Length: 215
Image 1: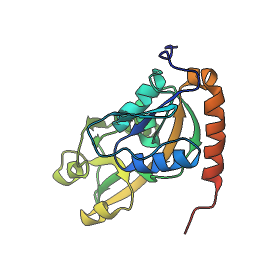
Image 2 (image 1 turned 90 degrees about the vertical axis):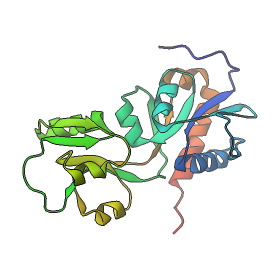
Image 3 (image 1 turned 90 degrees about the horizontal axis):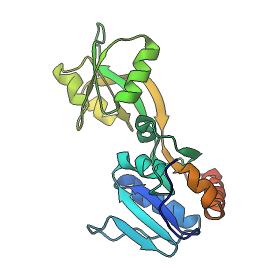
């Protein structure tokens, strides 16, 4: 197990993703008692608060920083966590940023699926293997739906939130691999070394998540 960097036992380092999850993550963590505020727009990637350091990372890097012990804990989407394959502790579904990872084709498409385009090759391979579909997987970035529209792939596996993009492009979901939402993840060594900070935090977050949601 990779040792954690030298820090005060009561100091937490958190890995949080840039973009849409960051503000919600900081709001929830602050309601759980951490002295955090949304960072001002700047080029800074590390933000210092009393007893807490926040690392602002790309989504895909959050599980890496937590697994390797640079961060004690983090918040990341389940889709990113599954694709990372990192052995972190996942104590809590935070129930925001909901979406689903789905198999998508053009409406009315027929014939075998021989090639699949996706940002999620690990999850795609596990799903296709379970379905007995020996398709080629093409790793793509950007607008994955375009692969199905141009014939680059017979199907794509991608995140769906409202389905609006699919409807606008004559695409449909054929199957849902799994549902995703923001998850709290924790470094396994930190869970022991910083238990006095992390265990109460997890308990408070669990209570907040269990509260009835507005609307």
